[in-house]
Amino acid sequence: MLRGTPVRGADAATFRHLCGHWARDDRAVYWSVFKRTKIDADTFEPLNNIWGRDAKAAYPASGKPLAGVDPREFRVFDSGAVSDGAPSLLHASDEGFAGDHQRVFFHQSTYPSAWEVKSADAASFVSMGGRYGRDNSSVFYEQRMVRHAKPRSFRPIGLCGYAADDERVYFAGKEIAGADPVSFVVLWCYTLMAARDKHRYYYMGKPSTRDDYVKLLEGDAKRHEEHIAEVRSGQFDERYRKGVVNFRA
Image (cartoon, rainbow, N blue to C red):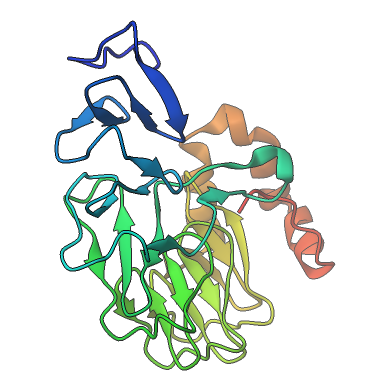
């Protein structure tokens, strides 16, 4: 049972946790509560929360084997652990990059299969956490190249899709026209995907206003009561100008 949800078909006597959402019994491998029937339990090795391999193939969390990949050469590009600011907040990521010496793949656990990052150079590829990665010449969001992005200065901002290089700001791999990379900060990520720079507020990468931001906060008014008050009073603008913005990104 996983958080109160039955793992159907699992043998309780031999069931054991392996890594992240991976588990196994004497007959099969499971990701979360789902049996992955194509994986050989006896030779399976989890590599992080969403990637693994057995003697014959490499697999994303969906359990669909990657065609043409030698599992002995298959590796992950990060540990699969992410944080929204402090080591104590580390948790297993449900997305990330992996590959062999020739190809790079991206997978998110809700997708039915992994996507090949066809333009990526596997030899120089680096995961930047979450859905962003780069090689020596390009930046990628999931399997797509991020147009105009500069890999040397590119950096994710928080964990909800915002990023910047020394010239531009991006959301979900697309440029946010007019956004300032120097002053851009993420205000609240998981529930609001809100941000701001010296020009304006943003919601999911789109230009927004302070009033719109307050309306978003009011959707969970009890949780954000103090912050709503300081935004309305202008105290938050003063904090922002001083560079003191202490929100989980």
